[in-house]
Each structure stands twice: as structure tokens, then as C-alpha cells.
Length: 247
Ligand SMILES: Nc1ncnc2c1ncn2[C@@H]1O[C@H](COP(=O)(O)OP(=O)(O)OP(=O)(O)O)[C@@H](O)[C@H]1O
Ligand SMILES: [Mg+2]
Image (cartoon, rainbow, N blue to C red):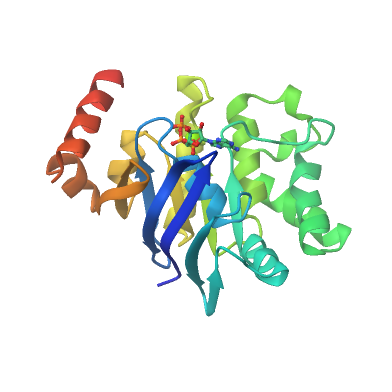
């Protein structure tokens, strides 16, 4: 077990968004999370790396045990350093080039010296086939290219876990595939990933497990074929039927 959360609780204005989430993430797995809009998927990811603070719960991560209700500063920093998040809207710095976007996270987030950081950034762009775009600014890049650079920035230091929040949902349909291919390659290289997405191709073919999240909790979790072809709960069946109608 790489990371486990137990009884994670989070309220917003008296509304219980996460209602005792129990989740285990295994080393090297790709865990896909699906679920209705507004159910708390983003909130769950944000709580896993302390972009948001839980009301209560426990996290076991590597050899640490963290009280999510009152984590120490060191624990928060440690978790942030060993996880990375990829957002829906790329979140690249608009006034930095592709290479600077990747390098500066290393320099300011991880204390890597500028020369090494730029070498690593250039290599990451080479691996993506985007080396010729290294001096382009985000507005000069397609949405798909920006997101691929966002993923390179998140993964260049090989974090223990990468959290993806609907990484392709802001993209034009023809750009989705290139981003999913990058993610598949990361998965094949053993990167542990938690991915909120409704991309069925990815969920079916790349996920190790699929979790259906609703009503503040994980309702059902299992192998992709089990969840998609033999869902156990009525709630899961309803959601999958609605999803099939919409995609
Ligand atoms: N910072 C916040 N302050 C108050 N309420 C919030 C905040 N962030 C999220 N919420 C509420 O928590 C609930 C869950 O939101 P969240 O963004 O986690 O859902 P989601 O499952 O990611 O939805 P979507 O599929 O649309 O992205 C929503 O009702 C939302 O309004
Ligand atoms: Mg969301």
C-alpha cells in the first residue's frame, strides 16, 4: 500500500461533501474515479495533497501517519513534495515559456539548480516531441500541447502519486487522444496515478481499478470490467446509463 486515507470528512458551509471516504492507492496502479458532477471528486483530490484541508481523517503515506484534521507543517510539505496535481485548465504560467514552466517548478518547488532544471525540462519536452516548442508561450500552444506540458511539469520529478482532475475535459475532442496517450505512457512506466475522468477508453484500457464516487463516499470500486459490465449498486448502474447517453 502506498497511500491510504480513512474516514476522510470535509464540509463546506455545513454541507458534508466528503462523508467518511476510505481509499487505498497501491504502488504503480492507475485508479480512475468517476461520479456525478458536484459530488466531491475535485474536493477529494484537493484534500489528498492539502490544497484543501480536511475536517478529519487519517492518511498513511509511505511510512508516515498523518492526522488530516491537524497535520503538521512538515507533513503538509512532505505530502505536497511527493504528490503532484494536473488540473483541468492546464494552469501554466502565461508569461513563461514551455521550458520555463517545467523548469521553474523544479527550481522553486524542489530547490533544483537552474542549469539542471533547464536540462530536465528540455529532456521532458524532447520525450514528448515538443522540443521545438520549448520557447513558446502558452498562448502560442494548443490546449492539448499546454496540457501535455502541464503533465510533464507535474511528473518530471517522478512524484509518488500524480492526481489528475479531468485533464482532458477542457480540450477539443481531437486533442484528447494525445493527452491520454501521454498518460498511458506514464502508467506503463509505473507512475502511480489517481485520475478523475469520464474518458471511457482510458478507464477501460489503462485503469487498474475504477471507483464510483457519489454522495460523499466511494460507492463501489473494482476492476474496470467489473464496474462497467457488472456494477453491483443501483446508484452505479444509473450513473453509467446516464454516462453512456452523454458520451
Ligand atoms: N471552496 C469551496 N467552498 C464552498 N463549497 C465548495 C468549495 N469547493 C467545492 N464546494 C462544493 O462542494 C461540492 C463538491 O464540489 P467538487 O468540485 O468537489 O465536485 P466534483 O465532483 O469535482 O464536480 P465536477 O464533476 O463538476 O467537477 C459542490 O457542491 C461544491 O459547490
Ligand atoms: Mg471536479
